[in-house]
Image 1 (cartoon, rainbow, N blue to C red):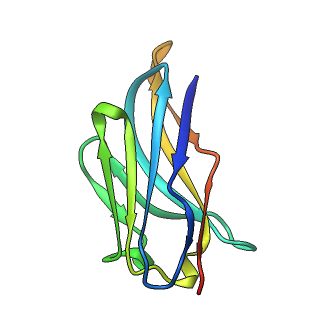
Image 2 (tube, rainbow, N blue to C red):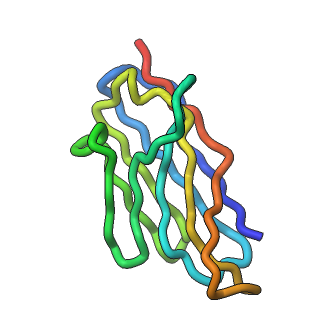
Amino acid sequence: QVQLVESGGGLVQPGGSLRLSCAASGSIFNIYAMGWYRQAPGKERELVATTTSGGSTSYADSVKGRFTISTDNAKKTVHLQMHSLKPEDTAVYYCLTRASRSDNPLVPVNYWGQGTQVTVSS
């Protein structure tokens, strides 16, 4: 199996910063992409930022210029550095990893983390 462990959420004041991390482990053959989604109460889950194994990145318009996604390929870890946080960034943030397993190396599957709460409030 593939496991994702997220860390770094918490409570921060508006204008503050947080760094989320997500480490993938297990019988991983290849990672195609990693990213972050978020879901606020009463809203649908939405894309925040993604990065592919080829180095392409994409961001939601609402976070461009404030959030930066990065990876440590050796550690199979993705980070989300968040600056200038706003109350509307409050949500549960989920890590997504698209990867294939060693027992089925040609079939990529989406794996989700358990979620980490980010609350932006004074």
